[in-house]
Image 1 (spheres, rainbow, N blue to C red):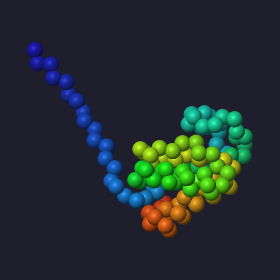
Image 2 (tube, rainbow, N blue to C red):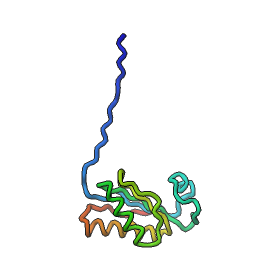
Image 3 (cartoon, helix red, strand yellow):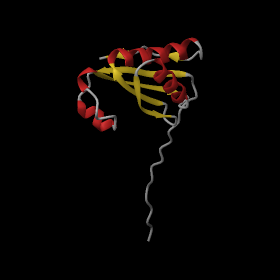
Amino acid sequence: MNDTHEQIRIVQETVAGKEITFAHVIGGPAPIIYQKLGLNPSIDYGSTAIGIMNMTPPESAVIASDIAVKSGNVYLGFADRFTGTMIVTGDIADVTAALNEVCQYFRDVMKYVVCEVTKR
């Protein structure tokens, strides 16, 4: 009996580069977004924002997290050194300032290619 199973192999590869590829501020997000992301549910949803960034190399998220939390009154919701993703929450002005501070440092000091911070 010839029992061959076809298997699909997926190779995921990242190219080592020094860049911030995504930086966005979500102003006044719906509470369901906080819940689905596993973020702090005991906040005032009406006056808050979520900031999300992605960068390579992914370990850069550690440095970005440090800069963000030291830049103002933001809460570090998530940082992943394996995917390069960072999420911060707080007042919209603080979240915007934190993302701008991270981008400025990475661009001017670490010589990364940095995208624009977008906001909605």
